[in-house]
Length: 412
Ligand SMILES: Cc1cc2nc3c(=O)[nH]c(=O)nc-3n(C[C@H](O)[C@H](O)[C@H](O)COP(=O)(O)OP(=O)(O)OC[C@H]3O[C@@H](n4cnc5c(N)ncnc54)[C@H](O)[C@@H]3O)c2cc1C
Image (cartoon, rainbow, N blue to C red; front, side, top):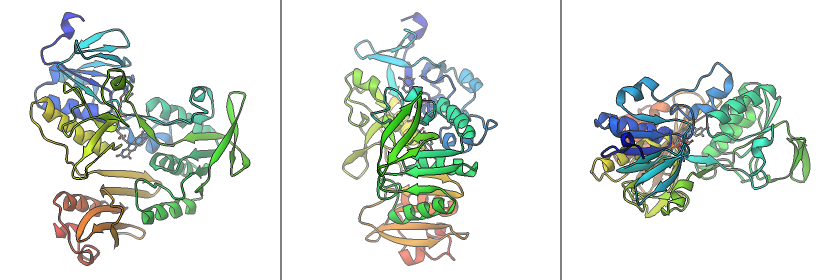
Protein backbone atom coordinates (compact mmCIF):
# COMPACT_ATOMS: atom_id res chain seq x y z
CA UNK A 1 0.00 0.00 0.00
CA UNK A 2 1.45 3.38 -0.89
CA UNK A 3 1.69 6.13 1.71
CA UNK A 4 -0.83 8.36 -0.04
CA UNK A 5 -3.46 5.65 0.03
CA UNK A 6 -3.41 5.17 3.79
CA UNK A 7 -5.54 8.05 4.96
CA UNK A 8 -6.84 8.39 8.48
CA UNK A 9 -10.55 7.51 8.43
CA UNK A 10 -10.52 6.53 4.74
CA UNK A 11 -13.90 5.47 3.41
CA UNK A 12 -13.75 3.16 0.42
CA UNK A 13 -16.95 2.71 -1.62
CA UNK A 14 -17.03 -0.23 -4.03
CA UNK A 15 -19.41 0.26 -6.97
CA UNK A 16 -20.14 3.30 -9.11
CA UNK A 17 -23.92 3.27 -9.25
CA UNK A 18 -26.85 5.11 -7.69
CA UNK A 19 -26.20 4.20 -4.06
CA UNK A 20 -22.46 4.92 -4.31
CA UNK A 21 -23.08 8.34 -5.85
CA UNK A 22 -25.70 9.17 -3.21
CA UNK A 23 -23.29 8.19 -0.46
CA UNK A 24 -20.56 10.36 -2.02
CA UNK A 25 -22.97 13.32 -1.96
CA UNK A 26 -23.77 12.71 1.70
CA UNK A 27 -20.10 12.40 2.66
CA UNK A 28 -19.23 15.59 0.79
CA UNK A 29 -22.05 17.46 2.56
CA UNK A 30 -20.63 16.15 5.85
CA UNK A 31 -17.19 17.52 4.95
CA UNK A 32 -15.65 14.05 4.42
CA UNK A 33 -15.14 14.11 0.62
CA UNK A 34 -11.35 14.15 0.83
CA UNK A 35 -11.37 10.82 2.69
CA UNK A 36 -13.40 9.00 0.04
CA UNK A 37 -12.21 6.53 -2.59
CA UNK A 38 -14.84 5.51 -5.14
CA UNK A 39 -13.96 2.22 -6.84
CA UNK A 40 -15.85 1.60 -10.10
CA UNK A 41 -15.92 -1.47 -12.30
CA UNK A 42 -17.30 0.58 -15.18
CA UNK A 43 -15.30 3.24 -17.01
CA UNK A 44 -18.16 5.78 -16.86
CA UNK A 45 -18.82 8.19 -14.03
CA UNK A 46 -21.83 7.02 -11.99
CA UNK A 47 -24.88 7.59 -14.20
CA UNK A 48 -28.68 7.30 -14.17
CA UNK A 49 -29.53 3.65 -14.84
CA UNK A 50 -33.36 3.88 -15.37
CA UNK A 51 -33.14 5.63 -18.78
CA UNK A 52 -31.15 2.67 -20.18
CA UNK A 53 -34.31 0.68 -20.87
CA UNK A 54 -36.29 3.76 -21.92
CA UNK A 55 -35.07 6.97 -23.59
CA UNK A 56 -31.45 5.80 -24.07
CA UNK A 57 -32.55 3.02 -26.45
CA UNK A 58 -34.37 5.44 -28.71
CA UNK A 59 -31.37 6.70 -30.67
CA UNK A 60 -27.71 7.59 -30.73
CA UNK A 61 -28.45 11.18 -29.75
CA UNK A 62 -29.57 10.03 -26.29
CA UNK A 63 -26.57 10.35 -24.00
CA UNK A 64 -25.76 8.78 -20.65
CA UNK A 65 -26.84 11.02 -17.80
CA UNK A 66 -24.07 11.27 -15.19
CA UNK A 67 -25.33 11.73 -11.62
CA UNK A 68 -22.44 14.14 -10.91
CA UNK A 69 -19.82 15.74 -13.16
CA UNK A 70 -16.15 14.83 -13.10
CA UNK A 71 -15.42 18.35 -11.82
CA UNK A 72 -17.74 17.77 -8.87
CA UNK A 73 -15.76 14.71 -7.71
CA UNK A 74 -12.49 16.58 -8.19
CA UNK A 75 -13.71 19.60 -6.24
CA UNK A 76 -15.03 17.36 -3.48
CA UNK A 77 -11.62 15.70 -3.15
CA UNK A 78 -13.02 12.24 -3.95
CA UNK A 79 -10.47 9.87 -5.50
CA UNK A 80 -12.06 8.04 -8.41
CA UNK A 81 -10.81 4.62 -9.54
CA UNK A 82 -12.60 3.97 -12.86
CA UNK A 83 -12.54 0.68 -14.77
CA UNK A 84 -10.62 -0.79 -11.84
CA UNK A 85 -12.95 -3.07 -9.83
CA UNK A 86 -12.33 -4.26 -6.31
CA UNK A 87 -11.23 -7.90 -6.48
CA UNK A 88 -10.53 -8.90 -2.87
CA UNK A 89 -11.05 -7.70 0.67
CA UNK A 90 -8.41 -8.41 3.31
CA UNK A 91 -10.51 -7.94 6.42
CA UNK A 92 -7.63 -8.43 8.80
CA UNK A 93 -5.51 -5.69 7.26
CA UNK A 94 -8.60 -3.64 6.34
CA UNK A 95 -7.50 -3.37 2.76
CA UNK A 96 -9.37 -3.56 -0.56
CA UNK A 97 -7.34 -4.85 -3.50
CA UNK A 98 -8.20 -3.56 -6.97
CA UNK A 99 -7.74 -5.31 -10.30
CA UNK A 100 -4.78 -3.01 -10.98
CA UNK A 101 -3.20 -4.56 -7.84
CA UNK A 102 -3.42 -1.22 -6.06
CA UNK A 103 -4.41 -1.59 -2.40
CA UNK A 104 -6.67 0.83 -0.52
CA UNK A 105 -6.71 0.85 3.26
CA UNK A 106 -10.06 1.63 4.84
CA UNK A 107 -11.55 2.62 8.15
CA UNK A 108 -14.97 1.94 6.62
CA UNK A 109 -15.71 -0.08 3.49
CA UNK A 110 -19.09 0.20 1.74
CA UNK A 111 -20.22 -2.43 -0.77
CA UNK A 112 -22.50 -0.79 -3.34
CA UNK A 113 -22.01 -3.39 -6.04
CA UNK A 114 -25.60 -3.59 -7.29
CA UNK A 115 -26.91 -6.60 -9.16
CA UNK A 116 -26.26 -8.50 -12.40
CA UNK A 117 -28.81 -9.43 -15.04
CA UNK A 118 -29.64 -13.13 -14.73
CA UNK A 119 -28.75 -15.45 -17.57
CA UNK A 120 -30.07 -18.86 -18.55
CA UNK A 121 -27.89 -21.86 -17.72
CA UNK A 122 -27.65 -22.79 -21.41
CA UNK A 123 -26.32 -19.31 -22.22
CA UNK A 124 -24.09 -18.70 -19.21
CA UNK A 125 -20.87 -19.50 -21.07
CA UNK A 126 -21.80 -18.32 -24.56
CA UNK A 127 -23.99 -15.27 -24.19
CA UNK A 128 -21.28 -12.70 -24.78
CA UNK A 129 -20.51 -14.36 -28.10
CA UNK A 130 -24.05 -14.59 -29.53
CA UNK A 131 -24.48 -11.59 -31.78
CA UNK A 132 -28.28 -11.40 -31.52
CA UNK A 133 -28.82 -12.03 -27.80
CA UNK A 134 -28.71 -9.17 -25.32
CA UNK A 135 -29.06 -8.56 -21.60
CA UNK A 136 -29.37 -5.13 -20.00
CA UNK A 137 -27.78 -3.86 -16.84
CA UNK A 138 -25.15 -1.23 -17.61
CA UNK A 139 -24.17 1.42 -20.14
CA UNK A 140 -22.15 -0.96 -22.32
CA UNK A 141 -25.10 -3.40 -22.54
CA UNK A 142 -27.45 -0.54 -23.44
CA UNK A 143 -25.19 0.82 -26.17
CA UNK A 144 -24.91 -2.67 -27.71
CA UNK A 145 -28.66 -3.29 -27.47
CA UNK A 146 -29.41 0.09 -29.03
CA UNK A 147 -27.35 -0.80 -32.10
CA UNK A 148 -28.92 -4.27 -32.33
CA UNK A 149 -32.42 -2.88 -31.91
CA UNK A 150 -32.08 -0.26 -34.61
CA UNK A 151 -30.86 -2.87 -37.08
CA UNK A 152 -33.64 -5.38 -36.29
CA UNK A 153 -37.27 -5.59 -37.42
CA UNK A 154 -38.44 -8.05 -34.78
CA UNK A 155 -37.56 -8.23 -31.10
CA UNK A 156 -38.31 -11.15 -28.80
CA UNK A 157 -38.19 -10.38 -25.09
CA UNK A 158 -37.91 -13.23 -22.64
CA UNK A 159 -39.45 -12.05 -19.36
CA UNK A 160 -42.43 -9.82 -18.59
CA UNK A 161 -40.94 -7.89 -15.66
CA UNK A 162 -40.36 -4.14 -15.52
CA UNK A 163 -37.18 -4.05 -17.59
CA UNK A 164 -38.46 -6.48 -20.23
CA UNK A 165 -41.70 -4.52 -20.63
CA UNK A 166 -39.89 -1.19 -20.79
CA UNK A 167 -37.61 -2.45 -23.54
CA UNK A 168 -40.60 -3.95 -25.36
CA UNK A 169 -42.52 -0.65 -25.20
CA UNK A 170 -39.49 1.32 -26.39
CA UNK A 171 -38.96 -1.07 -29.30
CA UNK A 172 -42.63 -0.84 -30.23
CA UNK A 173 -42.42 2.97 -30.18
CA UNK A 174 -39.53 2.62 -32.64
CA UNK A 175 -41.88 0.72 -34.95
CA UNK A 176 -40.46 -2.77 -34.34
CA UNK A 177 -42.52 -5.92 -34.18
CA UNK A 178 -42.30 -7.15 -30.60
CA UNK A 179 -43.02 -10.48 -28.91
CA UNK A 180 -42.86 -10.86 -25.13
CA UNK A 181 -42.76 -14.36 -23.63
CA UNK A 182 -43.57 -14.65 -19.94
CA UNK A 183 -43.63 -18.02 -18.18
CA UNK A 184 -45.87 -16.88 -15.30
CA UNK A 185 -49.64 -16.74 -15.76
CA UNK A 186 -49.59 -12.93 -15.36
CA UNK A 187 -47.23 -9.99 -15.70
CA UNK A 188 -45.21 -8.42 -12.88
CA UNK A 189 -46.28 -11.14 -10.52
CA UNK A 190 -44.02 -10.17 -7.63
CA UNK A 191 -44.38 -6.43 -7.92
CA UNK A 192 -47.90 -5.21 -8.67
CA UNK A 193 -51.53 -6.16 -8.06
CA UNK A 194 -53.42 -8.40 -10.48
CA UNK A 195 -55.63 -5.44 -11.42
CA UNK A 196 -52.69 -3.26 -12.42
CA UNK A 197 -51.00 -6.19 -14.19
CA UNK A 198 -54.15 -6.68 -16.29
CA UNK A 199 -54.20 -3.00 -17.26
CA UNK A 200 -50.53 -3.19 -18.29
CA UNK A 201 -51.18 -6.36 -20.31
CA UNK A 202 -54.15 -4.85 -22.16
CA UNK A 203 -52.29 -1.61 -22.89
CA UNK A 204 -49.29 -3.42 -24.36
CA UNK A 205 -51.47 -5.73 -26.44
CA UNK A 206 -53.45 -2.73 -27.70
CA UNK A 207 -50.18 -1.15 -28.83
CA UNK A 208 -49.52 -4.20 -31.00
CA UNK A 209 -47.10 -6.14 -28.78
CA UNK A 210 -47.60 -9.91 -29.05
CA UNK A 211 -47.55 -10.63 -25.33
CA UNK A 212 -47.92 -14.29 -24.33
CA UNK A 213 -48.36 -15.47 -20.77
CA UNK A 214 -47.73 -18.88 -19.24
CA UNK A 215 -45.38 -19.92 -22.03
CA UNK A 216 -42.14 -21.74 -21.43
CA UNK A 217 -39.38 -21.13 -23.94
CA UNK A 218 -37.02 -24.04 -24.45
CA UNK A 219 -34.60 -25.56 -26.94
CA UNK A 220 -32.39 -22.72 -28.03
CA UNK A 221 -30.90 -23.46 -31.45
CA UNK A 222 -27.54 -21.75 -32.02
CA UNK A 223 -26.13 -21.53 -35.54
CA UNK A 224 -23.05 -19.63 -36.66
CA UNK A 225 -22.67 -17.61 -33.48
CA UNK A 226 -26.33 -16.54 -33.47
CA UNK A 227 -29.47 -17.76 -31.77
CA UNK A 228 -31.41 -19.03 -34.77
CA UNK A 229 -34.62 -20.09 -33.06
CA UNK A 230 -36.23 -21.14 -29.84
CA UNK A 231 -39.08 -23.46 -29.08
CA UNK A 232 -42.24 -21.93 -27.65
CA UNK A 233 -45.03 -24.33 -26.68
CA UNK A 234 -43.39 -27.06 -28.73
CA UNK A 235 -43.14 -24.93 -31.89
CA UNK A 236 -39.88 -23.56 -33.27
CA UNK A 237 -39.88 -19.76 -33.67
CA UNK A 238 -37.20 -17.88 -35.58
CA UNK A 239 -35.31 -15.27 -33.58
CA UNK A 240 -33.95 -12.07 -35.06
CA UNK A 241 -33.00 -10.39 -31.77
CA UNK A 242 -33.61 -11.74 -28.27
CA UNK A 243 -33.40 -9.81 -25.01
CA UNK A 244 -33.12 -11.88 -21.85
CA UNK A 245 -34.93 -9.94 -19.13
CA UNK A 246 -35.43 -12.58 -16.48
CA UNK A 247 -34.44 -10.62 -13.41
CA UNK A 248 -31.27 -9.75 -11.58
CA UNK A 249 -29.11 -11.39 -8.93
CA UNK A 250 -27.21 -9.47 -6.25
CA UNK A 251 -23.52 -8.86 -6.95
CA UNK A 252 -22.10 -10.40 -3.80
CA UNK A 253 -18.99 -12.24 -5.02
CA UNK A 254 -16.57 -9.92 -3.23
CA UNK A 255 -18.48 -10.23 0.03
CA UNK A 256 -18.75 -14.02 -0.20
CA UNK A 257 -15.04 -14.42 -0.90
CA UNK A 258 -14.30 -12.25 2.15
CA UNK A 259 -16.41 -14.55 4.34
CA UNK A 260 -19.26 -12.09 4.93
CA UNK A 261 -22.69 -13.57 5.53
CA UNK A 262 -24.73 -13.58 2.32
CA UNK A 263 -28.11 -15.00 1.39
CA UNK A 264 -29.63 -13.49 -1.75
CA UNK A 265 -27.53 -10.41 -1.01
CA UNK A 266 -25.06 -9.25 1.60
CA UNK A 267 -26.80 -9.64 4.94
CA UNK A 268 -26.94 -6.32 6.78
CA UNK A 269 -28.61 -4.99 9.92
CA UNK A 270 -30.99 -2.02 9.94
CA UNK A 271 -27.96 0.34 9.91
CA UNK A 272 -26.48 -1.37 6.79
CA UNK A 273 -23.70 -3.15 8.75
CA UNK A 274 -22.65 -6.52 7.37
CA UNK A 275 -21.48 -9.40 9.56
CA UNK A 276 -18.20 -7.41 9.79
CA UNK A 277 -19.19 -4.07 11.35
CA UNK A 278 -16.47 -2.15 9.49
CA UNK A 279 -18.08 -3.19 6.18
CA UNK A 280 -21.49 -1.87 5.13
CA UNK A 281 -23.62 -2.84 2.13
CA UNK A 282 -26.26 -0.70 0.41
CA UNK A 283 -28.61 -0.75 -2.57
CA UNK A 284 -29.44 -3.70 -4.81
CA UNK A 285 -26.73 -5.91 -3.27
CA UNK A 286 -27.98 -5.66 0.34
CA UNK A 287 -30.41 -8.01 2.08
CA UNK A 288 -31.89 -5.98 4.93
CA UNK A 289 -34.51 -6.40 7.67
CA UNK A 290 -37.73 -4.88 6.38
CA UNK A 291 -39.00 -2.58 9.11
CA UNK A 292 -42.00 -3.95 10.98
CA UNK A 293 -42.32 -7.10 8.88
CA UNK A 294 -40.06 -9.59 10.69
CA UNK A 295 -38.50 -10.63 7.38
CA UNK A 296 -35.57 -9.57 5.26
CA UNK A 297 -35.69 -8.44 1.69
CA UNK A 298 -33.66 -6.93 -1.11
CA UNK A 299 -35.06 -4.07 -3.16
CA UNK A 300 -33.98 -3.03 -6.63
CA UNK A 301 -34.98 0.62 -6.88
CA UNK A 302 -33.45 4.06 -7.02
CA UNK A 303 -35.40 5.00 -3.88
CA UNK A 304 -33.84 2.15 -1.91
CA UNK A 305 -30.34 2.92 -3.24
CA UNK A 306 -30.60 6.59 -2.22
CA UNK A 307 -32.24 6.00 1.15
CA UNK A 308 -29.86 3.22 2.18
CA UNK A 309 -26.97 5.54 1.28
CA UNK A 310 -28.42 7.98 3.82
CA UNK A 311 -28.60 5.26 6.49
CA UNK A 312 -25.01 4.21 5.74
CA UNK A 313 -23.86 7.83 5.97
CA UNK A 314 -25.31 8.09 9.48
CA UNK A 315 -23.63 4.81 10.46
CA UNK A 316 -20.26 5.97 9.11
CA UNK A 317 -20.64 9.22 11.05
CA UNK A 318 -21.25 7.27 14.26
CA UNK A 319 -25.04 7.69 14.49
CA UNK A 320 -27.43 4.74 14.38
CA UNK A 321 -30.45 5.70 12.27
CA UNK A 322 -32.15 2.42 11.32
CA UNK A 323 -33.53 2.16 7.77
CA UNK A 324 -37.27 2.78 7.75
CA UNK A 325 -37.85 4.53 4.44
CA UNK A 326 -41.11 4.04 2.59
CA UNK A 327 -40.45 1.94 -0.54
CA UNK A 328 -41.54 3.51 -3.82
CA UNK A 329 -40.83 2.75 -7.45
CA UNK A 330 -41.67 3.93 -10.95
CA UNK A 331 -41.63 2.45 -14.42
CA UNK A 332 -42.32 4.01 -17.81
CA UNK A 333 -43.76 1.78 -20.51
CA UNK A 334 -44.87 3.52 -23.67
CA UNK A 335 -47.54 6.01 -22.61
CA UNK A 336 -47.87 4.52 -19.11
CA UNK A 337 -46.13 5.98 -16.09
CA UNK A 338 -46.57 3.43 -13.30
CA UNK A 339 -45.79 4.53 -9.76
CA UNK A 340 -46.00 2.41 -6.65
CA UNK A 341 -45.69 3.48 -3.01
CA UNK A 342 -45.69 1.22 0.04
CA UNK A 343 -45.66 -2.56 0.18
CA UNK A 344 -48.61 -4.35 -1.35
CA UNK A 345 -50.38 -6.53 1.22
CA UNK A 346 -51.34 -10.04 0.10
CA UNK A 347 -54.69 -9.88 1.85
CA UNK A 348 -55.61 -6.25 1.22
CA UNK A 349 -58.87 -4.77 -0.04
CA UNK A 350 -58.52 -2.65 -3.19
CA UNK A 351 -60.29 0.61 -3.96
CA UNK A 352 -59.98 2.47 -7.25
CA UNK A 353 -59.60 6.23 -7.54
CA UNK A 354 -60.06 7.83 -10.95
CA UNK A 355 -57.14 9.95 -12.10
CA UNK A 356 -56.94 13.35 -13.76
CA UNK A 357 -57.09 12.12 -17.38
CA UNK A 358 -58.82 9.30 -19.27
CA UNK A 359 -57.08 6.01 -18.50
CA UNK A 360 -55.34 7.35 -15.42
CA UNK A 361 -56.18 5.93 -12.00
CA UNK A 362 -54.81 4.79 -8.66
CA UNK A 363 -55.45 1.58 -6.74
CA UNK A 364 -55.49 2.01 -2.98
CA UNK A 365 -54.77 -1.08 -0.88
CA UNK A 366 -56.17 -1.26 2.63
CA UNK A 367 -55.89 -3.85 5.37
CA UNK A 368 -58.70 -3.14 7.78
CA UNK A 369 -58.82 0.64 7.94
CA UNK A 370 -55.12 1.12 7.26
CA UNK A 371 -53.92 2.33 3.88
CA UNK A 372 -50.75 0.35 3.04
CA UNK A 373 -49.98 0.76 -0.63
CA UNK A 374 -50.99 2.89 -3.61
CA UNK A 375 -50.39 2.02 -7.27
CA UNK A 376 -50.88 4.83 -9.78
CA UNK A 377 -51.07 5.00 -13.56
CA UNK A 378 -50.42 8.43 -15.07
CA UNK A 379 -51.46 10.09 -11.82
CA UNK A 380 -48.22 11.61 -10.49
CA UNK A 381 -49.89 14.04 -8.08
CA UNK A 382 -51.84 11.20 -6.47
CA UNK A 383 -48.59 9.20 -6.21
CA UNK A 384 -46.84 12.08 -4.43
CA UNK A 385 -49.79 12.56 -2.09
CA UNK A 386 -49.93 8.79 -1.44
CA UNK A 387 -46.28 8.78 -0.42
CA UNK A 388 -46.93 11.54 2.10
CA UNK A 389 -50.05 9.79 3.44
CA UNK A 390 -48.18 6.49 3.81
CA UNK A 391 -45.17 8.13 5.45
CA UNK A 392 -47.52 9.77 7.94
CA UNK A 393 -49.44 6.47 8.40
CA UNK A 394 -52.57 8.50 7.58
CA UNK A 395 -55.59 6.53 6.41
CA UNK A 396 -58.53 8.44 4.95
CA UNK A 397 -61.66 6.30 4.68
CA UNK A 398 -61.73 4.63 1.22
CA UNK A 399 -64.88 6.46 0.09
CA UNK A 400 -63.24 9.83 0.82
CA UNK A 401 -59.86 8.85 -0.63
CA UNK A 402 -61.52 7.68 -3.83
CA UNK A 403 -63.57 10.84 -4.39
CA UNK A 404 -61.87 12.31 -7.48
CA UNK A 405 -63.38 15.73 -6.73
CA UNK A 406 -61.12 16.00 -3.64
CA UNK A 407 -57.34 15.99 -4.18
CA UNK A 408 -55.71 13.09 -2.34
CA UNK A 409 -53.33 15.51 -0.65
CA UNK A 410 -56.30 17.17 1.04
CA UNK A 411 -56.45 14.14 3.34
CA UNK A 412 -53.03 14.79 4.82
C1 LIG B 1 -32.24 -0.96 -17.26
C2 LIG B 1 -32.67 -0.61 -15.87
C3 LIG B 1 -33.78 0.20 -15.67
C4 LIG B 1 -34.19 0.52 -14.38
N1 LIG B 1 -35.27 1.32 -14.20
C5 LIG B 1 -35.65 1.69 -12.96
C6 LIG B 1 -36.75 2.57 -12.75
O1 LIG B 1 -37.41 2.97 -13.71
N2 LIG B 1 -37.06 2.92 -11.48
C7 LIG B 1 -36.34 2.49 -10.40
O2 LIG B 1 -36.63 2.86 -9.24
N3 LIG B 1 -35.29 1.63 -10.57
C8 LIG B 1 -34.94 1.24 -11.81
N4 LIG B 1 -33.89 0.39 -11.99
C9 LIG B 1 -33.19 -0.14 -10.81
C10 LIG B 1 -32.15 0.86 -10.30
O3 LIG B 1 -31.40 1.37 -11.36
C11 LIG B 1 -31.26 0.14 -9.30
O4 LIG B 1 -32.06 -0.29 -8.22
C12 LIG B 1 -30.15 1.05 -8.79
O5 LIG B 1 -29.30 1.41 -9.83
C13 LIG B 1 -29.39 0.35 -7.69
O6 LIG B 1 -28.30 1.12 -7.31
P1 LIG B 1 -27.00 0.38 -6.76
O7 LIG B 1 -26.02 1.45 -6.44
O8 LIG B 1 -27.35 -0.60 -5.72
O9 LIG B 1 -26.48 -0.50 -7.99
P2 LIG B 1 -26.07 -0.05 -9.44
O10 LIG B 1 -26.63 1.26 -9.80
O11 LIG B 1 -26.34 -1.23 -10.30
O12 LIG B 1 -24.49 0.12 -9.34
C14 LIG B 1 -23.63 -0.93 -8.99
C15 LIG B 1 -22.28 -0.64 -9.61
O13 LIG B 1 -21.30 -1.43 -8.97
C16 LIG B 1 -20.37 -1.87 -9.94
N5 LIG B 1 -19.62 -3.01 -9.39
C17 LIG B 1 -20.03 -4.28 -9.23
N6 LIG B 1 -19.02 -5.02 -8.69
C18 LIG B 1 -17.98 -4.18 -8.51
C19 LIG B 1 -16.67 -4.35 -7.99
N7 LIG B 1 -16.22 -5.52 -7.55
N8 LIG B 1 -15.83 -3.27 -7.97
C20 LIG B 1 -16.28 -2.04 -8.40
N9 LIG B 1 -17.50 -1.83 -8.90
C21 LIG B 1 -18.35 -2.89 -8.94
C22 LIG B 1 -21.26 -2.18 -11.14
O14 LIG B 1 -20.50 -2.23 -12.32
C23 LIG B 1 -22.22 -0.99 -11.10
O15 LIG B 1 -21.70 0.11 -11.82
C24 LIG B 1 -33.46 0.03 -13.26
C25 LIG B 1 -32.35 -0.80 -13.47
C26 LIG B 1 -31.95 -1.12 -14.75
C27 LIG B 1 -30.75 -2.01 -14.96
